[in-house]
Each structure stands twice: as structure tokens, then as C-alpha cells.
Image (tube, rainbow, N blue to C red; front, top):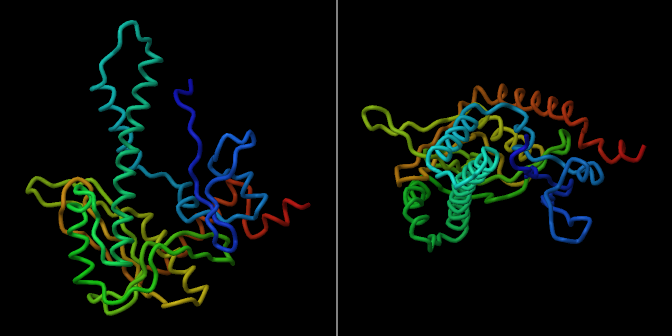
Amino acid sequence: MILVKRESASHWYLPDRTPFHEVERADGSGLRPVTLRDARKTGAYPSVTNIIGVLAKPGLDAWRVEQGILAALTLPRLDNESDDEFARRVVYDMGEQVTKAADLGSRIHTACEVYAQSAALPENDEVRTLFEPVREWFDAEVERIDKVETVVAHHEFGYAGTVDLVAKLRSTGDWAVVDFKTQRIKRDDKGTVKPGFYETWPLQLEAYRQAILSSGEGMQPRDIVSLVIGSTEPVPVMPKVWPREQLGAYWRAFVNVRNLWTFIKGYCPIEGVKEEAQ
């Protein structure tokens, strides 16, 4: 039984780095997410997160299961409601919680982008409160900025993505690719904040860095940094500079994932147009 039919939200980019996320529906009723079939017709590149999406994400999956359980425990049953109808309401309620978390994360990301470009603070009180530790980090750590929310592409390997920030950091004295990650705050028994740094994050960052290096455009970053931002309370941001000596391993791992993606999808973007024409 399929409780709720969902459309894919995978992101794509045209080879000239133009975002290609939605297309017109055939019946003219609006836009729909781009599918693999659409991508084949244009030779579109998958996003880095699209590629990494073929990997299992136990942490994210566990959180979604938790939201589903909480929804099932808190939603009241309606009179004469069947199990199937109740299950659908649980799925929709769970989806609303996931959407709210994603929306707040997007607003915090937007606040980071705006502040990096203009030093303007968020107008929304909730976002401004959560953003304050980020502002403190920016002011203390960022010396110069090269890229903000910039699309980069690697034409040899056929992928693209949007980089949050490329900046020169005072703590390392060098240029770095920085990725903002909003996260629900968890604490240990002593009340210490315990951020989760996931194994796919450095693969994503190194894919961006390699795309920048391959283009030769702008500054050439030597570091990759994940910056965890609290999404439930304003706590000091938690940066992680991934070790330089592991960058080669991260890149090889990403290329392997990219090769797995092309095998599963049956589509190699850099050959897509040629294959479609045959």
C-alpha cells in the first residue's frame, strides 16, 4: 500500500551551470520537479547531493522514523476512521514536521547568504536569534569572501552543485569551502552540545572543491569546513575543518559514489546527449 505519492525533488543543472530543477507540466497546470528522463534530453548534470543520495543515511532515516512515531502517538483518531486513513494522516503530519525543519534550515541558510553579501541581519525574530552565533563566527573568522551561493560544475565528471561559501578563514590562514548545516541540538548527560558530523559531508565538500579547482576560477581553496548551526536554540556554531591529508580519500570515495550513481541510473551525464541521439 502506497500511503502518499511523492514527487522527487532531485536537483539538476545544465552544463552551462544554469539550475534545472523544474519544468512545465505537459497539461500546462504548472511546474513539476525535473526527472531523470528530462535530464537525459538536455544532458543535465546531477547535483552533488543528488549523487550522494544513492547512499544510505541511517541518521536521517532514524530521525524521520522518530517523527513518524511521534505523529502516530500524538494524533487523535477520528470517529469511524479506518487504519489506512489514520496512517495517511500520520504520514502527512510527519511530512509537515520534516517540511518545517527544512524550511527553517533554508531560512537560516538564506540569512547566511545575505549576511555574507551585505552584512544585513534577518528580520524574522526566530531566525535572527538562531543566526546570532553565526554572525559572531562570521565577524571573528571570515577574513575575505570569494563565493557565496555559487553554482560550480565539474565537466570531466559531469556533476554540479551550489557552494554555500568560499572564504579565507583567520583560524587556518587559508581559503576554504564552507558548508552550513542546521541541526537540532542534542546534549550529553553533562549538558554538553553534541553535534553530529556525518561521513558523507566531506565527500560533498570535496566534490565542490574539486569542481572549483577544475574550473580555475577565483580562489583555489585548500580546506573544506562543515559549520553546524543550532536549529532549536542559539548555541555557538560548531565548525569542523576536515583533515587535509584525507582530501584525496574523500575525492576517491565521491568518484566511486558518482560511478555507482551512473550505474544505478543508467545515465552518464557527460555522454547523455550523445546516447539519447543514438
